[in-house]
Length: 448
Image (tube, rainbow, N blue to C red):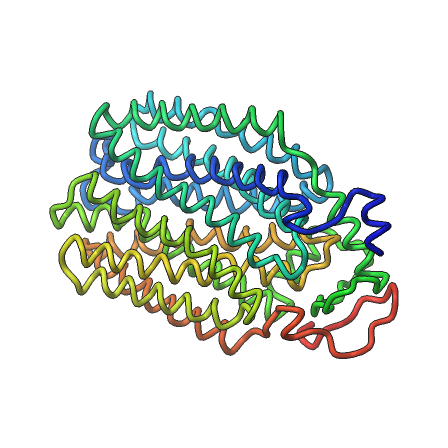
């Protein structure tokens, strides 16, 4: 549609045109990251206090396995719900789902309470983080998607790193349970109030973009969006398209799984590995915090860079760089060298993480953007569960954490090769649809 028509409908896309709402969505994802970061440093080192026997790595990993399975399923549902009932309502539900978490951690009698808390965390994250991504893409121009998602992920993961460090410091000062309870409760309440008062619905932007896209009136390169079998595809069709039918979607989904297996390694086994080598909670918090903070901050340039040079090779190279960082953690010794390896891993995560999401958005029709992103995020965050089962089993069988590190390295190297040789570039300016497009007719791509 023309700019004049868009202005009449109040759906002018662009980060600058929607600066206040874009900033509010960024603040929301900061709250999401702070909530997630409360568990990154303290909980794994307290497993024995909750009755987890030494060496019972699968039982230790159960809190991440539960988080991954639940978040993956909720991601899938959240995307479809955001398309159907709107983004803001799903975000409100996400914060309500987080309210039991501080109380379960404060009053936990055994590790099962921690697992239950992470079920609620998975529900909350699946709803809240999903819709912030969708909303920020709704507001941005096509050429700003990498930047928009980079800002989103920067806000979330930088906040996660800050929370990991702060909770380590607070736990040392006031006790772990009290620190987790007070910090997380304050964040959740403020986030819910801010959503009610300041967040606005963005679904109308996606609808306006879809109408212009289908009518051929967008004054920008046309993405290689695959043709769906029905005019209004349902959740099942989008799930099979993103998971199996479309080679590029399929490659992106498996890369999402691989990167979460690597993050599971950091979440569960990094604190144990470093604790076994003599680091205290605060030092462990610095290592995991640097990993998350570099991951978050670097997404500001990696998302913007992908808008200029494309997504594919940044994603593949990021997977390989994370693998190199893990090798460094195992082979190097000493706090400073572990910090450097963590920073390298964070840089690799920044290269791949926002750009997979941007790539999924590139080749998704705005009509079913929320659903396709939900499917990708389903597979990506199910990677937590897959990683917990796989790495927990490897560590338990070997009775050592190091074999799980090497398992992750092999998986990341293979995943990068899959992206490099099993997918197309998705950026519409770099790899646009080449054949003529007629108004109202979807273009079948060579990948379909």
